[in-house]
Image (cartoon, one colour):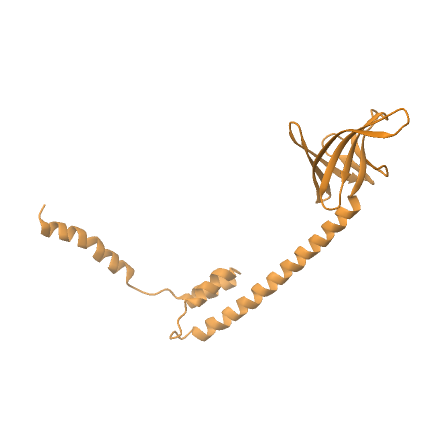
Length: 194
């Protein structure tokens, strides 16, 4: 190949690229207005920021930017309030449901051996296997730790067992916490300490 042909071969794509880049500049004010009307505030703000001081729509773009800042601040404050309300409600529910519970199984519960959940209001949980001696005093035979939380009306307990994490979810029905998978299992609050 001749060097002249090679030069044209390399220059032609460069020249085509330069020509394709030329032309009308984007109308950032119009694009920003469209994005603003679509409530896509971050995109609108970026588009308004592209309007140069020398453009005739610069002052309008600055007004939109100011509006967007106000809207974003209001949305942020609203989300903070919502987050705060959710945290307060979650804390209230954690305090309501914290305590000691015996696991009762309808028609089959034993009075000599029972499962116990201890749910602390900070989200920590313990599972205990307790047996009662002849004097009716509970003795802890096994203890596992984990955590618990309440969300959308479901109380979920995760305990680290020997074979992995064991999870149970209970829902309150007519004042009784019933297991969502095994309907015969329920939690019964107890004042006993372990």
